[in-house]
Length: 88
Image 1 (cartoon, helix red, strand yellow):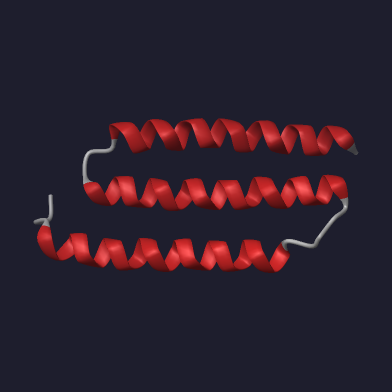
Image 2 (tube, rainbow, N blue to C red; image 1 turned 90 degrees about the horizontal axis):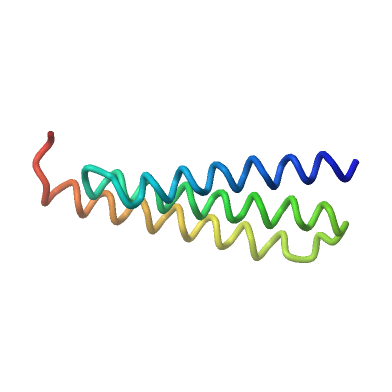
């Protein structure tokens, strides 16, 4: 069972590296905003996998609140940027 957690952590780490590359090389501001949102989602997913590995679910509410705030922040920032930048 431990190898499932190890494979999951490796896949999340690879996805995180790809998202960081997209964050650094993104063409527009909206690309960067979406990559930050995906990075936050990957961090929350990695923390959930770690909690499953330790069999400790005490931070579920905190992670849900963090993910919700990150999502709302990304949406509001995207709306503000969308009004300022022309479509490409």
